[in-house]
Length: 259
Picture 1 (cartoon, rainbow, N blue to C red):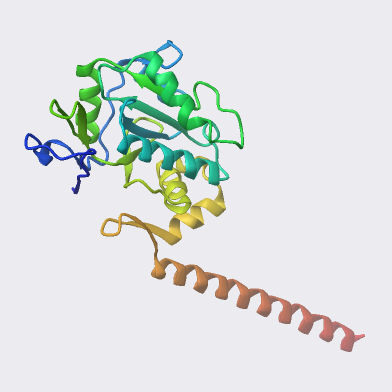
Picture 2 (picture 1 turned 30 degrees about the vertical axis):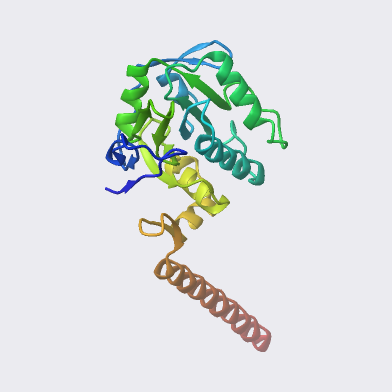
């Protein structure tokens, strides 16, 4: 278990940073019976977020946040725009506000602001959803995934952590990516790791085999031992093909001599 804390925009004497950060709860099951409202006014159940059997990139944010939430969501939009994979293809993105004062109107404005930078395709309302919910329900989700936030009356904003959660197709926490800058490799590998392995291509399985999540660097690193194993397997296969080819040639020569 690890803890990552990054406060909101300004300091306050009332902040206890143990109440505002991220504690990893890998394997935790998201509550599947919570009702939320989408930015277009449609009511959805958390179970619906996983109805298509795809991993979900979960972003906790509040839509009036003056800085940190915007940086997190901007980074998600950037890594999506730079990636070959788009929301709705191999994964979905879900943003949930933890400010009970947020409305469908503020959710729509936040959605338009951040999805407008994605130019590769037009996203529909289910590819990247911006949701609001009751304070108690959203708190329940936050507690489950280890995302803690605290309202600061003096500043009229929230202290909270910076990071995103990758959820499996059945709603379990698979991986955390921290900070406000996500690179394509970590983003893709986290989604692959959360996916149903039966649906992952052979090339992607090899990629997953060659990389492993490093809890110290909070990113994916090459596993030299596994690459050596693959290299050894390729060498053995190559030698096998060479020997097979030599045997064929030897047999052909013998047949020609016999004639």
